[in-house]
Image 1: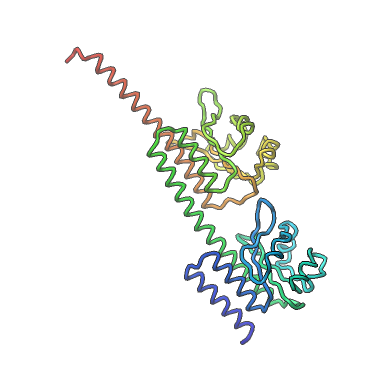
Image 2: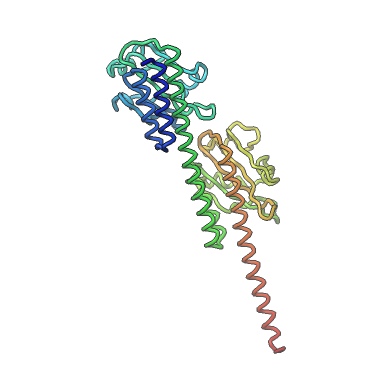
Length: 348
């Protein structure tokens, strides 16, 4: 059987796994296993990037000992830049190549050569797929392209799983918010639950909601989660660019709050451990009544569906406030009517 036929059959098997709704773990294990069998390797491992620690963590592997995998984590910064530049990294002699570390560990593991390619999602490297051989080897162009194609399949599986989990989490978050709104008129409690649930569901460091005080012209803190009291004290200012634009109905994304010119309190952001953030307006009856801010402690890209969810949640928060206000107004009107009827009982 030709090498091209091996490649074709491998991708047929992976495509079938996608169609039959195999889980992420099964798909990643299949990709790793396929890399070894088709390319006649000793071992293979798919690593994903841990954004907080800036290292690659093994997600699926075959043929490597636990001692080797966890001896020295792969530093993401050192490998991502050359990978993105070249598209792959080949090490014919992994036990002596100066670009690699832990030569003795590789020799003890029986590793001779190494080929590493990026796992990408939306043109961004989120991990790497590595093939290890037991004998010294010069990797051919078709082998490199095959492993890159396998890594692309891994990226698709990971992104598909993330989208599915995000949809499920978003639906549960929205359902819980709707339930809170229907079961409680305590707006403080509803908004506090909202900030906490957003952080838990969307993986944010912190969140806060401020409403406009029309008497003072300031933003009054109504609810927060995950943020220090010192950080919260400085946020009532409406003259910052992010607050001003949010109060005009604009949703803003700040990729790096410690360097962005639109952020006034960069030192405070850095001290709080905030990197990326979303600032969204809260509307009630097409009127902006406040601002919702979400903070991340790692630099993040916020996809369109997540941004839509954030805006919808901010709008739901506005509806909760509106419902509570209407209820209180009805209660006041009812009381006034009862008092008015009581004062004219002599008519009857």
